[in-house]
Length: 315
Image (cartoon, rainbow, N blue to C red; front, side, top):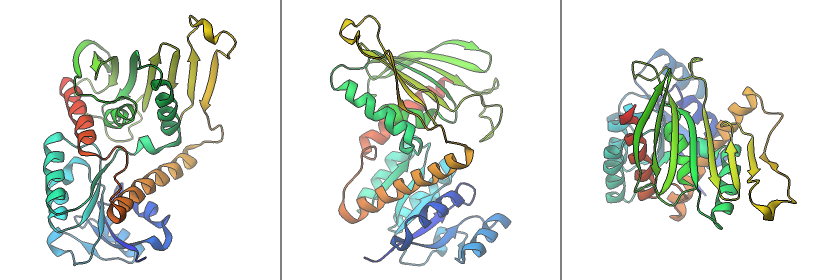
């Protein structure tokens, strides 16, 4: 099988995608970097021995897929890539208007277009989602509690959408503003939900990775039988049995569903590279076998994006 020829767009977080592509060995070949031409992008192209392109119009034929690590600022580039017949994996967050346009362009050119929510592919989130789905098979969730930042909100919703069947009837209202945090309550789909979201007092996002952020994301989903908590993107994931459920009287009251005591910042960085590689592999499978993974159907992507935008507008 011939390797898929991959273009990386953007050289800030794009460097991480280059490391992720390398995990695929001979299944993928980095064939270029698309960037504005900064010293960083020039150095990165030299480091990996690939051409640096400064515009989509300069790209050669034969590129199979692009990893677009440009966030919402890369919307026009992504549309141009799709128009050139290139499959795209793009970074979150993305607004519904753009997603509708990109999905339409992709469908009209028989292309695959994926959004990388990223954090749902980390081990803690995968354990959290798996346990939630097992509990949901018996009873629907009773409530959701979220602590997140303006930057982690989209990824948090992506995790929750893997647990809940729909966000369609979601509605929210601001109930209080406490220091750096805004409290938003309402229904996430049909489930009562409370969001505590950190943002700057002037409403603007803090710089990515700012030490002023106090959390990444913490999610609790309550069921009649107990509460499942993911305490951060790194875990642990903990199950607390509902003491009022007599049928559980012989079970441990607390169970650690997922925990990695050896995890440190360096190992977490490796996990995140592996998570991006799983997203690349999912796009490749869609390209080669037309198997669309969970979380990449158009209705799912728009569900997450619509809800993120509704909450963000309140911030």
